[in-house]
Amino acid sequence: MTILLTGVAGFIGAHVAEALLARGEDVIGFDNLNAYYTPKLKRDRLDRLSGHKRFEFHEVDVSSLETMRAALGDRRPNRIVHLAAQAGVRYSIENPSAYVEANLHGHFAMLELARQLEVENTVYASSSSIYGGNTKIPFSETDQTDDPVSFYGATKKADELMAQSYARLHGLSLTGLRFFTVYGPWGRPDMAYWIFAEKILKGEPIQVFNHGKMSRDFTYIDDIVAGTVAALDRPASGMGLAVPHRIYNLGNDRPEQLMDLIRYTEQGIGREAEKIYKPMQPGDLEKTWADIDRARAELDFAPKIGLKEGLEQFADWFRPRWEQYC
Image (cartoon, rainbow, N blue to C red; front, side):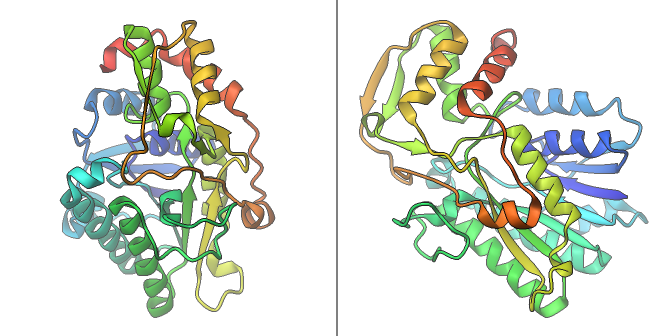
C-alpha cells in the first residue's frame, strides 16, 4: 500500500512511519517542521527514515489542500494517517490562532483530501484532552465531551465532529484515536518527563504542579504505534456502523502518580531533582485514565510497557543526546 502520513517528523508520526516501512509499505510523509520545539529534533527523526527506499518526505503545510495535492502529484495513497497538529495544552492559551490553523483548517483540508482521493481508510489523532472537565473515571468513548478545559481540547473535539459529518455525508471511513500522555525515546521536549530529565541534568529545580497530586495514564510510544497501525488495518467501514466513524481511547489503562513519574525519571537519570511545588496550572487535569475496553475488543490493543520500564528506555536514549536539543 501507499500511505500518506502527516506529522511524519513528529514524535508519534516518526515511530508510526518506521513501523509501516518495516512491514513493506510505501510512506509519503508530510510535515511543516515548525519551530514549536527545535526543528533539529524533527530533522533527526526524519534522518532515521530517509534510508528507507520506500519513504519520501515533503515539507508541506497540511492546512493547504492545494499544497498537499501539488506535493502528491498523480499519486493516490490508499490510506491516510493524519497526525499533524499543533500540540500542547498550555501553548494553546498563549497562541490559540496556531491551533485554529493547524488543528481546524488542517483537519478540514485532510478530510477534503481523503474525500477527493477516495481513500479506503483515514486514521487521525484526537486526544485525551477532549474529556476536559469530565469527573467520571475512567474516561470512556461514550462519555460526554462538551466541557473542554483547554482550547487545544476544544479543537480536538471539533475535529471529531467534522469527521463525523464527513463520514455521514460522504461515506468516508474515519477513525479517531484519543491518545493518552504518550512518552518514550525521541519524544517531545514540552512534555513533563523530558522537562524533568533535562532540568535534573542541568542541576536546575523542577516545578511540580498541584503539589504533586496529579496522575496520568502514561502510554509508551510502542504501544501507541501498535494501536495506530491496528486502527489503520481495521477500517470503520468494515464494522457495520450506520456512520463509518469510530473513536478509540489508546492509553495504558493504568493512571500513575506524578511523583512516581519523577521518581522513575530520577532513577533513570541517576540524580535526585530539587523540587518546587506549585498550584495547578490553567488547562490542566488532575487525573486521566483511559477505558480501553473498546480498543481491546476491536483492535486487539494490549499495552505492554509500564511506566518504570518505559522511562528507563527513555533515559537510556536521552542521556547521551539531550544537549543537542536544548
